[in-house]
Image 1 (cartoon, helix red, strand yellow):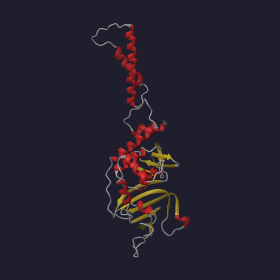
Image 2 (image 1 turned 45 degrees about the vertical axis):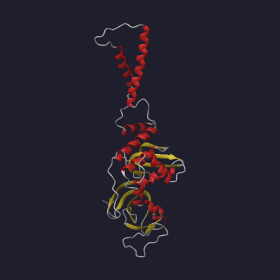
Image 3 (image 1 turned 180 degrees about the vertical axis):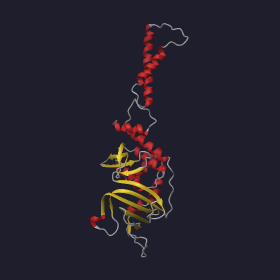
Length: 320
């Protein structure tokens, strides 16, 4: 096991004692002293030479057994494999988020505000063509009305644009234009699936048993093998859903631990350059990386995105 993973185990499981290379020798010495020292008030009895040989063998065997028990109790007899580190770390992450504060379902008229940094984003307004796309460290503020009827955004501290949501390309906006909508309309199934009410109801309704949850997401994502689309669906939940209930969050971490090809690394950075624990998947020609806070184990972002803050507010444009 690489040094960074050993260090990670020590950090996420502080109750484990560090490996003591002298434990076996000390255990052997203590046990031999106990067997060979005369009992208090008891007269020593001479034993035949063959008896001493058997006793010596017994002492040595018992000493090795005791030493093995001591080393086992310290966790030093067998270095943890990367799979063990992954399982233990994600279990600790799950237990930590599971004990967090409950998430309350917002009212339909409330908004979910997110402040994030993205690799690219579309500018709002009348900009068209190549200039409409911004690249680099792009600051994006986004408000989604919980009922999914509107969204609002501000890019690079710019003007707040409010848009209406068209559920499908067949739907058309009302003839009576809402004066509060200054950014036009967006639509399509992909947009509707991202709305806060849809995400909240889907994630809150997932099984909390990790095996059942994994089976459900494999089915819903249409995974045909290698779990690429399964991990992608889980990553998308963390990217888009700011209202994941604690038990669902824990179940998602435990489900990740069951997926072949998922491992954790001591250090990773999100797009804002913040350091955390990296949950990495590679397999089937695809790959994903999620960055978790080292203290809270909450999702921070990915190498292409950073979630800088979020909260439920009462109106578009509110930040707290």
